[in-house]
Length: 386
Image (cartoon, rainbow, N blue to C red):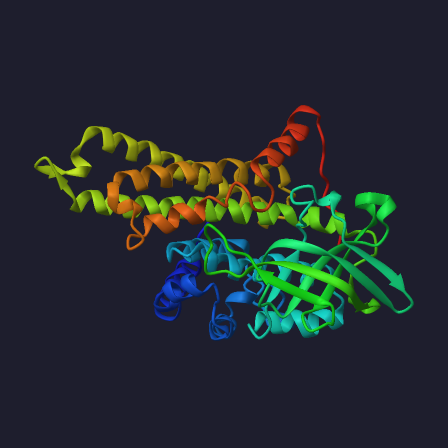
């Protein structure tokens, strides 16, 4: 219904690429928390960072179901950190470059991002303002032909080794969320410093806290219009939340596949695990949950591809699909018994990496309130032009 022969060929090619170029290095990157630069350039050479970006900057301008395949196959190789580094670059930082960046910014940063020669990160969360975006304290004060940036960000994927940062800051703090703007900051700018964080999961990705101490930003590095930063962030949250939902259904599906394979090989009390009714019924329920969420996410993708503003549905997807993935992977680990708890088996990593789903990109608690406003208070979030 959603995938053509061209989509399927793309999936086969990308899966083969990951197995050949990425999988042999994953265990090392999980241990070091550093992804070697060469793989970014290989992604760029193959066009994987330009899937849904304009041909004018080296992209392929393909529909969103190619993005779905990109996300699903990244989850298959079982490194949430590596996957996050790739999609945070391609669909967080680069989304803002494409939507709000000037021609000059796109020509330099978007083009080189598509080529894999530059790595980007998106800086929104702060120590005292995570899901509460409007509560951020970082400021950018206009001073002639430049802005002076001061403040800090935290939990930033690619926050340590990226080449540029897309930063949200308040240019008019007294206006609260209406006084927020977006900026492009080059990593080498004096006053920018970063520290790598030690995480439970997503071990391969470099997640950092970042400090801005009197950072001078050229006025031409303002992204879009001053004061419209909050609107830009909200505009792109639908895609980010859908991405988190797609990641979750794929993660759960692959964990379930592994558990079923294990059950067909493992014997207890003279028969295979898959022949015990209590386990068979658990599998049936989990497979049903995965299929329902996957179908819902494909429907949202189709609607987003048609230009609909699916903020409610994408929020619902992230809320429920990430919860489902946690529950499914918990049960899958249980089915492996003691082996599920061992690092040499893939389920332990699936389990750790999955836990960030209900936290990153807006916690489940915040999403509940956002959805409640739409279904109970008739709150309408309208699409705004960039």
